[in-house]
Length: 386
Image (cartoon, rainbow, N blue to C red; front, side, top):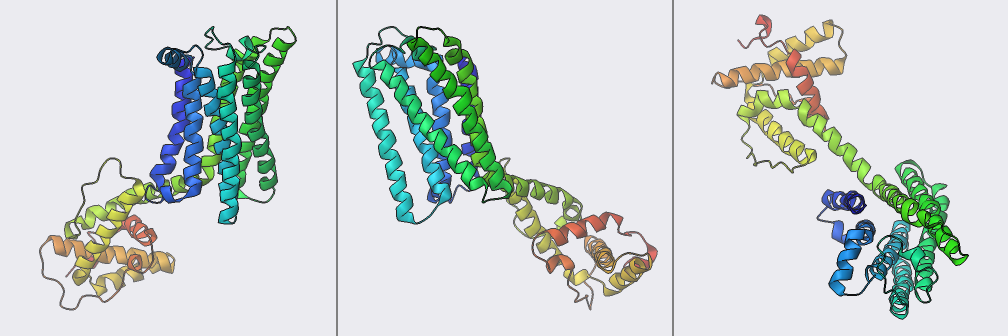
């Protein structure tokens, strides 16, 4: 069971690494990013603390039987508090109002954590229980109140999340609505799959019945799944657009391959030693800069006659004016690279024509030129440099 819980903690916490890696320079100044990462990290720590191996280790290190219980319950209460703070930052508003609400959440759950520790100290928990403490001590004075208190504190946070998600879900669209629906699904699963089963098992003990399997076998996997769904809901609206942008950059980087292979000899831009951890957008940015530098170096070899003849032929072949322009530019660039690689002298009167790729922002123009280059008539006698 410990291995499964640790794996859930790793998966849960990895999303915070992705958020922080996305914008490391500004993440520390963004309350929403900080609160999101804090909530996810605390959720991961809850799983780590709840693992039987961790509980046993904590108990052995402190010499106090079941000391891992208030540690786990306190961490769960801190996680519940972080979720409410995240919702406050997500909703936004006047800075003072946000700060006031955050302090209220911290004060309320800080009191809950203190009460959990005090109640544990007042109770009698001499027998170590790693998986069924909630039901084993459900009728023990002090511990009974501690168990009920952490469950009620977590329930309050989940109910607040459900109410907020339902309210906001009616007013937003797109990825934000999808994220809210995932958070709502995770919160409902936590309420019904984790907390309801915990309450049922504890109340059963109060009434002299045994439903311990609900607390030990049903609740833990439901809590893990609920937390993962909630984290996906928080992260999705922020990471998916960035992930899509990185995917598109990867595609553009690959499509620029033929163009870069053709002109890289002419580029004088310093080439950094790209590392394996560079994201596609960073790699694309350097390739774009290098290609533009190479096109500038090849401009003295641009032959206007080559471009004009290629344009006329493309138009006669039925291509659209825009596509014919790109094909003609590719032919002119191909002729220029042949002249430059042959170490011929630049033209006496090079074409003053500006390539489409240098007139439009971004990489779309370069990608069009790269696509046209492979079908360019490199060896056509009527388009060769004379």
